[in-house]
Image (cartoon, rainbow, N blue to C red; front, side):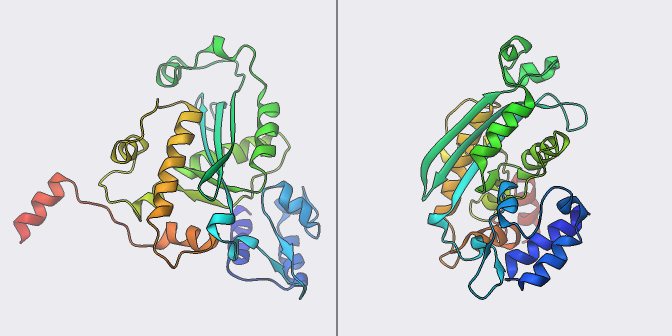
Length: 267
C-alpha cells in the first residue's frame, strides 16, 4: 500500500492530473482515505503535501514549477534511543531556510523512559536531561506545525523522515507526505569526495560544530545543502528539478587511495 501511495505522489510530481482521475486514484489508497478526505486539499496540506486546483480544474503540485529561491526547506536531524522498533526519538533539531536565508529554528529534547548507555555516550544525552522534556506526542505535534508543508531535508533522509513519519502514524497523527531531499544524494552529485558522511563533508566545507546533537547536525546539514545548491547546473530551476537531480544525476565521487592505485596499474 505504501508503494501505491509513493507511486501516486511521484505521478503528481511529474504531471497535473484531471480532478476526477485524481480522486479516483487517491480513493484507491486505503491508508490515505482512512485519515483524510482526498477531495479536501487542506487535508493533504496537513500531512505536508501542498496541492492546488488550477483554473482548468486539474490538480497540480506547486513544487513542479516553484523556483528554488521561493521554496521553504526544513533541514532536520533527530537523535534516537534505538531503532524504530526498539527505541524512540529523544531529540529533534531543525532549521528552516528560504532563498538561502534562515527563517526559523526548532529544537527540543523528548522524554523517554530509558536511554541505553552507548546512546548517551554517543550523543551526550542522559536520562536526567529528559526529566522535564515534553512527551513524544507533544514534541511531534509541535514539530509538525513547524515543518508544515516545507520540503523535508536531512543527511540520510530516509532514516529521519521514516522514523518521524512512523512515530506520527503510531500516535494517530497520520504519516508525513512532505517532499524530501537527501543531502548525501545531493552532495554526491555536486561535491567531489570519496566519502559523504556528515563528518567528512563538514571537514571539506570547513563546518565546525559539535556532532551527534540534533540541532548542531541539522545546522551542519543545512550548510551542506546550501553549498550543494550553489554548485547546481543552471538548468535546475524548480524544486522537482532538484529532487530528480539528487536521485539521477551523475555522481562525482573521487576514488579512494586503493582504487587510485589499481587504476594506475591498469594504465
